[in-house]
Image 1: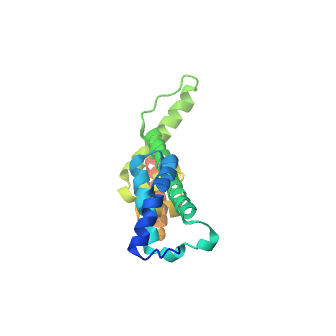
Image 2 (image 1 turned 135 degrees about the vertical axis):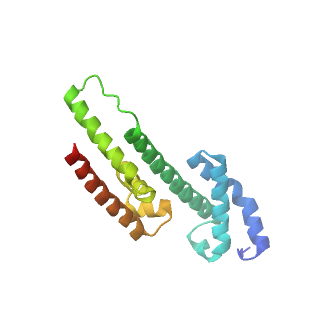
Image 3 (image 1 turned 90 degrees about the vertical axis):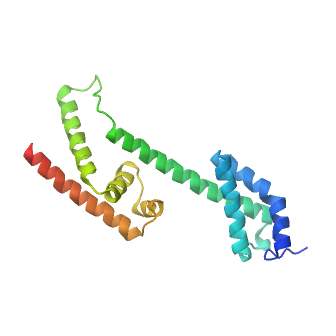
Length: 179
């Protein structure tokens, strides 16, 4: 029987047949039940909105749906990994400075001063610029990834990074001259 995915009855049958498999793939990648359920909803919503995107000549529907779920789950997993790295790096930057015992005292003092200057300048930046710089430098994200994550146009993300760097540089020069 040829399925018309625009027909609600056929669509319901497809959902009932395949939602468990889609959930299993999503859960296997994310390890999170709530995220896996969101992915199932997303996959079937995409199928409902664009039923013509499935081409039966290229494979079976179940494989297509599971592949969509896997792709979406991997995207979410990568986003969470990048966010975790950014958070970890921010914690390192903001954390208290405990010099290691194997460091030479003069080097430890210089690094502590430099970190203090960077932290002070970061605190003085407007929140959007600070966030863009932290995500770019310590989070390792590109301007495009920052734009997607923050929900702004690419040009805005690039501007925030550029203007933030200019303000940091100017502020650091003034602070170092005063010292």
